[in-house]
Amino acid sequence: MRLRMIAVAFGLMLSAMAAPAAADKTHVAVAANFNERAREIAALFQKKTGHEAILITGASGAFYTQITHGAPFEVFLSADNERPRLAVENGYAVADSRFTYAIGKLVLWSRAVDVTNGEEVLKAGDFRKLSIANPASAIEGGTRWTVPDKLHSPILQDAVLLKKGADNKAAKAFLAFLKGPEARAVIERYGYALE
Image (cartoon, rainbow, N blue to C red):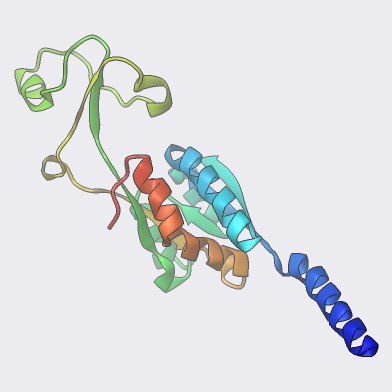
Protein backbone atom coordinates (compact mmCIF):
# COMPACT_ATOMS: atom_id res chain seq x y z
CA MET A 1 0.00 0.00 0.00
CA ARG A 2 2.77 2.38 0.98
CA LEU A 3 4.73 1.56 -2.19
CA ARG A 4 1.63 2.23 -4.26
CA MET A 5 1.13 5.66 -2.60
CA ILE A 6 4.77 6.54 -3.29
CA ALA A 7 4.35 5.53 -6.95
CA VAL A 8 1.18 7.68 -7.27
CA ALA A 9 2.90 10.64 -5.60
CA PHE A 10 5.91 10.23 -7.89
CA GLY A 11 3.61 10.09 -10.93
CA LEU A 12 1.83 13.28 -9.84
CA MET A 13 5.15 15.01 -9.28
CA LEU A 14 6.34 14.05 -12.77
CA SER A 15 3.06 15.29 -14.26
CA ALA A 16 3.39 18.61 -12.46
CA MET A 17 6.96 18.99 -13.67
CA ALA A 18 6.01 18.10 -17.25
CA ALA A 19 3.11 20.58 -17.49
CA PRO A 20 5.23 23.75 -17.72
CA ALA A 21 7.53 22.06 -20.22
CA ALA A 22 4.53 21.43 -22.48
CA ALA A 23 3.81 25.15 -22.69
CA ASP A 24 5.27 26.92 -25.71
CA LYS A 25 5.60 30.44 -27.11
CA THR A 26 4.57 31.97 -30.40
CA HIS A 27 5.53 35.31 -31.94
CA VAL A 28 2.49 37.09 -33.34
CA ALA A 29 2.67 40.09 -35.69
CA VAL A 30 -0.44 42.14 -34.84
CA ALA A 31 -1.89 45.06 -36.81
CA ALA A 32 -1.77 48.21 -34.69
CA ASN A 33 -5.53 48.71 -34.86
CA PHE A 34 -6.03 45.36 -33.11
CA ASN A 35 -3.35 45.75 -30.44
CA GLU A 36 -5.57 46.24 -27.36
CA ARG A 37 -7.89 43.41 -28.33
CA ALA A 38 -4.97 41.09 -29.10
CA ARG A 39 -3.43 41.76 -25.67
CA GLU A 40 -6.68 40.83 -23.97
CA ILE A 41 -7.04 37.71 -26.12
CA ALA A 42 -3.39 36.71 -25.50
CA ALA A 43 -3.93 36.94 -21.72
CA LEU A 44 -7.01 34.70 -21.95
CA PHE A 45 -5.10 32.31 -24.24
CA GLN A 46 -2.23 31.98 -21.78
CA LYS A 47 -4.57 31.49 -18.84
CA LYS A 48 -6.46 28.74 -20.67
CA THR A 49 -3.62 26.91 -22.46
CA GLY A 50 -0.41 27.85 -20.67
CA HIS A 51 1.07 28.88 -24.03
CA GLU A 52 2.36 32.43 -24.41
CA ALA A 53 1.59 34.66 -27.40
CA ILE A 54 4.33 37.27 -27.69
CA LEU A 55 2.74 40.20 -29.52
CA ILE A 56 4.64 42.54 -31.82
CA THR A 57 2.52 45.49 -32.95
CA GLY A 58 2.93 47.47 -36.16
CA ALA A 59 1.66 48.26 -39.63
CA SER A 60 0.42 45.34 -41.73
CA GLY A 61 2.35 46.48 -44.81
CA ALA A 62 5.61 46.72 -42.89
CA PHE A 63 4.97 43.29 -41.35
CA TYR A 64 4.42 41.73 -44.77
CA THR A 65 7.73 43.17 -45.99
CA GLN A 66 9.47 41.84 -42.87
CA ILE A 67 7.88 38.41 -43.37
CA THR A 68 9.22 38.26 -46.94
CA HIS A 69 12.67 39.01 -45.54
CA GLY A 70 12.60 36.24 -42.92
CA ALA A 71 11.21 37.96 -39.82
CA PRO A 72 10.72 35.44 -36.98
CA PHE A 73 6.93 35.76 -36.78
CA GLU A 74 4.81 32.61 -36.63
CA VAL A 75 1.33 34.14 -36.78
CA PHE A 76 0.18 37.24 -38.68
CA LEU A 77 -2.96 39.20 -37.71
CA SER A 78 -3.35 41.75 -40.47
CA ALA A 79 -5.58 44.83 -40.68
CA ASP A 80 -6.63 43.68 -44.16
CA ASN A 81 -7.13 40.47 -46.09
CA GLU A 82 -4.74 41.28 -48.93
CA ARG A 83 -1.42 40.72 -47.19
CA PRO A 84 -2.34 37.35 -45.64
CA ARG A 85 -3.57 36.29 -49.09
CA LEU A 86 -0.22 37.32 -50.58
CA ALA A 87 1.63 35.52 -47.80
CA VAL A 88 -0.15 32.29 -48.77
CA GLU A 89 0.24 32.84 -52.53
CA ASN A 90 3.95 33.65 -52.26
CA GLY A 91 4.76 30.70 -50.01
CA TYR A 92 5.29 32.48 -46.67
CA ALA A 93 2.16 31.08 -44.99
CA VAL A 94 0.43 27.73 -44.60
CA ALA A 95 -2.08 27.39 -47.43
CA ASP A 96 -5.27 26.45 -45.59
CA SER A 97 -4.69 28.51 -42.46
CA ARG A 98 -6.04 31.92 -43.56
CA PHE A 99 -9.35 33.12 -42.09
CA THR A 100 -11.14 36.37 -41.26
CA TYR A 101 -10.84 37.00 -37.53
CA ALA A 102 -12.62 40.40 -37.50
CA ILE A 103 -14.56 42.71 -39.78
CA GLY A 104 -13.86 46.37 -39.19
CA LYS A 105 -16.46 49.10 -39.16
CA LEU A 106 -16.22 52.51 -40.74
CA VAL A 107 -17.28 55.42 -38.52
CA LEU A 108 -17.68 59.09 -39.38
CA TRP A 109 -16.78 61.18 -36.32
CA SER A 110 -16.57 64.91 -35.70
CA ARG A 111 -15.87 67.08 -32.71
CA ALA A 112 -17.23 70.21 -34.46
CA VAL A 113 -20.10 69.09 -36.70
CA ASP A 114 -23.11 66.93 -35.78
CA VAL A 115 -22.64 63.83 -37.94
CA THR A 116 -25.30 61.62 -36.39
CA ASN A 117 -27.04 61.71 -39.79
CA GLY A 118 -23.79 61.07 -41.63
CA GLU A 119 -25.24 60.29 -45.04
CA GLU A 120 -26.81 63.77 -45.24
CA VAL A 121 -23.61 65.38 -43.95
CA LEU A 122 -21.56 63.64 -46.65
CA LYS A 123 -24.05 64.51 -49.41
CA ALA A 124 -24.12 68.16 -48.34
CA GLY A 125 -20.34 68.35 -48.63
CA ASP A 126 -19.99 71.23 -46.13
CA PHE A 127 -16.50 70.17 -45.12
CA ARG A 128 -13.04 70.66 -46.50
CA LYS A 129 -11.20 67.65 -45.09
CA LEU A 130 -11.80 64.05 -44.14
CA SER A 131 -9.07 62.16 -42.34
CA ILE A 132 -8.49 58.84 -40.66
CA ALA A 133 -8.20 59.23 -36.92
CA ASN A 134 -6.68 57.03 -34.28
CA PRO A 135 -9.73 55.63 -32.44
CA ALA A 136 -7.88 55.73 -29.11
CA SER A 137 -7.51 59.50 -29.28
CA ALA A 138 -10.62 60.51 -31.31
CA ILE A 139 -13.70 58.76 -30.04
CA GLU A 140 -14.26 60.77 -26.80
CA GLY A 141 -16.76 63.62 -27.20
CA GLY A 142 -18.09 64.71 -30.57
CA THR A 143 -20.70 62.85 -32.58
CA ARG A 144 -20.42 59.73 -34.69
CA TRP A 145 -22.21 57.79 -37.39
CA THR A 146 -21.47 54.16 -38.17
CA VAL A 147 -21.41 53.88 -41.95
CA PRO A 148 -23.81 51.12 -43.07
CA ASP A 149 -22.09 48.07 -44.55
CA LYS A 150 -23.97 48.55 -47.84
CA LEU A 151 -22.10 51.82 -48.46
CA HIS A 152 -18.56 50.39 -48.45
CA SER A 153 -16.59 47.24 -49.13
CA PRO A 154 -16.14 44.95 -46.13
CA ILE A 155 -13.05 45.68 -44.02
CA LEU A 156 -11.88 42.10 -43.63
CA GLN A 157 -9.03 41.47 -41.22
CA ASP A 158 -7.40 38.11 -41.83
CA ALA A 159 -5.11 35.92 -39.76
CA VAL A 160 -2.69 33.35 -41.13
CA LEU A 161 -0.23 30.77 -39.84
CA LEU A 162 3.19 31.59 -41.24
CA LYS A 163 5.51 28.84 -42.44
CA LYS A 164 7.87 29.60 -39.53
CA GLY A 165 5.04 28.58 -37.19
CA ALA A 166 3.91 25.48 -39.06
CA ASP A 167 5.43 23.16 -36.44
CA ASN A 168 4.79 25.38 -33.41
CA LYS A 169 1.93 24.02 -31.31
CA ALA A 170 1.47 27.40 -29.56
CA ALA A 171 1.04 29.17 -32.91
CA LYS A 172 -1.57 26.65 -34.03
CA ALA A 173 -3.30 26.80 -30.65
CA PHE A 174 -3.40 30.62 -30.75
CA LEU A 175 -5.16 30.61 -34.13
CA ALA A 176 -7.61 27.98 -32.89
CA PHE A 177 -8.25 30.08 -29.78
CA LEU A 178 -8.82 33.16 -31.96
CA LYS A 179 -11.71 31.29 -33.63
CA GLY A 180 -13.19 30.24 -30.29
CA PRO A 181 -15.91 31.77 -28.10
CA GLU A 182 -13.67 33.61 -25.61
CA ALA A 183 -11.74 35.47 -28.31
CA ARG A 184 -14.84 36.12 -30.40
CA ALA A 185 -16.55 37.69 -27.36
CA VAL A 186 -13.62 40.10 -26.94
CA ILE A 187 -13.64 40.96 -30.65
CA GLU A 188 -17.38 41.70 -30.64
CA ARG A 189 -17.14 43.73 -27.42
CA TYR A 190 -14.72 46.08 -29.15
CA GLY A 191 -17.21 46.73 -31.95
CA TYR A 192 -15.93 44.44 -34.69
CA ALA A 193 -18.25 42.20 -36.67
CA LEU A 194 -17.61 38.49 -37.16
CA GLU A 195 -18.22 36.14 -40.08
